[in-house]
Length: 258
Image (tube, rainbow, N blue to C red; front, side, top):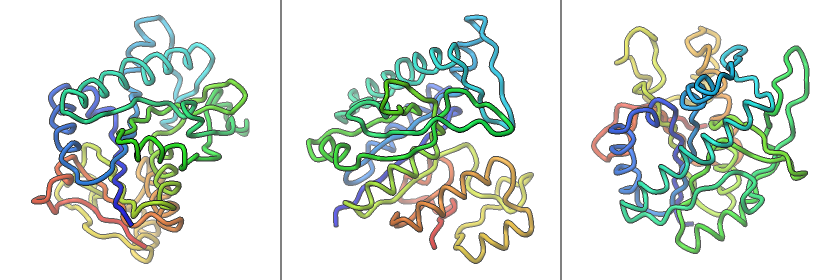
């Protein structure tokens, strides 16, 4: 089975021009087929405020009303996505920028209203891995932003971590798939105040223990839920840490397996 790497980058890398350039060089050097998934929440928040649109958050998640969805579509699907694609082309990677609507790649259901109405937010329903694979086989490197669609003409703001893990699950039908979550920390930390307290390997048993001890909490909870969901559905390994984990020399990151 051929190898495929799926890499997710967060807003802090996107916001920092030199960090983004350094990351894209590392991404370019990854062997074999690859797919990039990015967010862009910070850029969307700053653009919204320039346009006089207030960004509303609940528990760290964005409420996406109709105005906010317009900003997100412009920023994620336009500004951020095309900027990354152009930089990858300059590095001789034939990148193609996509939302979930392109090639009907990722469909979602609008999140039902419970305690909170999140507005135009999607929960991933289906990944058309055969369609994505046509692009990969044609030699393109797909670059997905955090937008999906419902199949009825409605775009939906969708968590980029979830998109990355669901695309990885879909593609693991065809490839030996590894996932990389790149963020500003060195990995999953034993002590949030000590950036060197990286837990280098987490399996299902240790994961349960870390949950019980409340070492995994807050924003790390949904990330690791996504990870174990992906591993149970065919993804081979998942790595979490800063961008240096994409180099062969660095072993200071968290590897997650079943």
